[in-house]
Image (tube, rainbow, N blue to C red; front, side):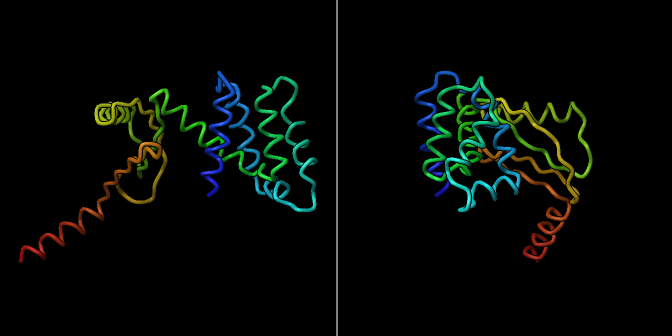
Length: 175
């Protein structure tokens, strides 16, 4: 439900703004702040008025903020939906990635992959999807490799344990 509401606000902001890049920079930073549990509690608190919450966010943005963003925050404040800012930001970021045909993905492995291997993975994914994909690395406890690009719905995992289990199942079925 939250995502559907966020899509409507994101679509409205996109329709009234020509250049979303500076707005997205502000929204990405604001989303990180709002994801903090203390800030989230303030934004969802019934004790603090919607006007105070809205003013708190607007005052943190400074003077050089796009009017469309200010209006969005005021509207979200009026409807007690300031906590939707991270979801709206996520939708807008996804839309921008889709428009640019550039996506970000994650490679999870127990050991760090070298730049050449990472580059080969990016190239292979580009051939497969037709999109430019920039991969970052994360450490994983299990032995194996996992690649995921959430915005494209790609998730591939290879683990020694899983291959071993499948091999055993295959042998059992063969007997």
